[in-house]
Length: 402
Image 1 (spheres, rainbow, N blue to C red):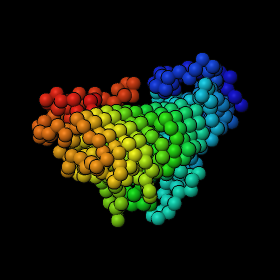
Image 2 (spheres, rainbow, N blue to C red):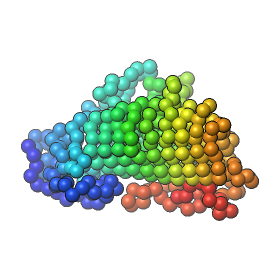
Image 3 (spheres, helix red, strand yellow):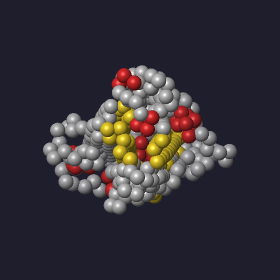
């Protein structure tokens, strides 16, 4: 049954993601709103007075232009939320908390969340939210304990905003396959791990094993994940990353045997052979990771890294030395990494801290205290202000600014 009533949704919920994504065009028409609540009934109409019980039922009913408004509470999933029907560019489908209420999707009861060591997760079971659809606006959800948090394969034109994906049994968020034009905005993804692989593949955010133009990451924080913060392994099209933070990745906090976590803040490629892809990263920071801050990981493409900062990484701050690589590094800052940079003969590096010379240690910047940047987000979901973090005392125009 379709709900004929249209309920307003506060800016902190569905309207916020629409504001982040921008207007969907003059042809957009208002759809209906389907309300979900823990005490609902899936045989009901999905109104505010008589809500549905499961998000899946609302997803199955939703049509282009509709909104799924989820009341606060914890939804203990016994099957993952599977999204296979698409909206349209002018009439996307929205999934968001009702008026900013806290909504938690808990995937701990999903069988694939407890896949044994060496086991594989069937494709259809990947993700507390498993998505093979386009033109959705999904915002404000907290997704925990799943076999991946969000898994999106073959997805175009989606906006994912203000999601929190943590403590999942694989990557917090993974986009793959033929996927283009997706925006991942203000994501917090942390403490994701993969016992079945002893830490080999659970990243905060992975855009990997696929292709598609126009994918953008902005304002993400990716921390304390078992493998990498961001991973672009075998993704053959450029990804743009802006104003994003990766730290504390690659440490064995779970005491896995035969630990296999890589520990890069940003892994910008890879494969056998690695495709040559000109990913762009600007205004971002990578600190205190177990390995490199930023690495080409064998990607020989024209990576463009500008005005980024690294601090205290156990490996190299900026690793761009793959033979034949053509990366361009401009205005970047390395502070107390094991070594500032490794650049190959084809890499063009100018105006970076290691080109400028001088001493770049903790005393050379206003602050190495990341606490402001790792605190609560602003009311609009943007990163908190950290105006002194890794800012040169000299005023030199290198590195990111928060």
